[in-house]
Image 1 (cartoon, rainbow, N blue to C red):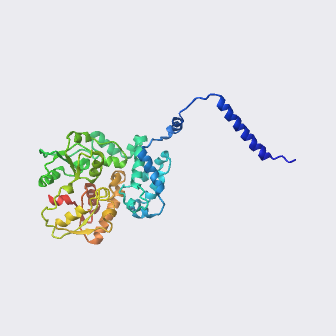
Image 2 (cartoon, one colour):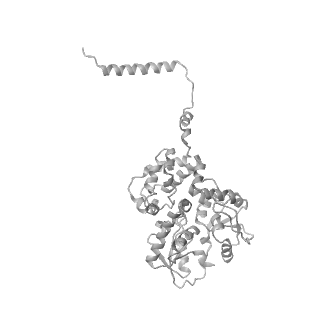
Image 3 (cartoon, one colour):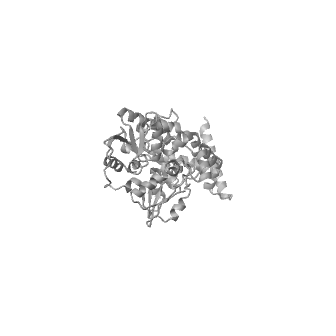
Length: 390
């Protein structure tokens, strides 16, 4: 008679497991919280709990079909000298374990969060939000490493309470009986001319009070530093009836952060359609759509109508409106890799030269600054539409 060794092995294993099961049912065991025990395995690996909304966002990456459309729309990837692998790579990163995010830090911070790739995604994958979430994770679990990437920002926050540096003094602040507040935001108070905004507000009879020393946290949120809004309580303490902002990034952020009872308006919305026609002398002008103003907040037609009203001949970039290309400043890229941001802005200047247009109009201070620097050598002038009214 032939002995079936494999059968004997199988029966032995079965008998052993059955006996072990009986033994465990008789001998009392210490009860443990298995969920906490599981978390304990990963404490040293910096596993961080996501909110339910964040978990849903992470799983959104599964909708990606790897169709290849999004890389075609990503200008930052094309101009990164192969340092940024593009939207598809960001989606791949979202499917990894959290500790592995550190390996892709360089990719996360080269995305400008412009969301142009999302316009072409047939499955509506929220690519820019995934990039932002992974930045937040790095900030949450290892803030020291996070701030080592942005030392100047941290220094400015600690010294001035403003990520851009020391605010310019304002000689006068508009006062009025209304509860309207003019909110310039952290960048405009440092990099622009606050007095010019006061002049424009007077001309438009906004009767609003300028609030300084307040940051909405928009630019900080874009790099992943969440829940940092230096001085925002100062704004809320005014109990504003409405907030008028001049920065698309602030506009986007305040719309999310302020209670619904406080209307937030962008400066262009305060310019009446009946404003006197300008004397642009039919000068040709290109309009650049700021990503946060156009794609994210839907203000696309108003700037164009105003440009025409002011007497300029409106010329469009080859990619405009909802598909307008980023200036290179979004997502804090100007802090992370200013040279790459300048290369992206240079694309706008190159197209303006090909079209023979010497004036680019926009309505974002950051877009203006980057394109202005990129166009200096070619004598391409860059202005905000609101400047034309002063």
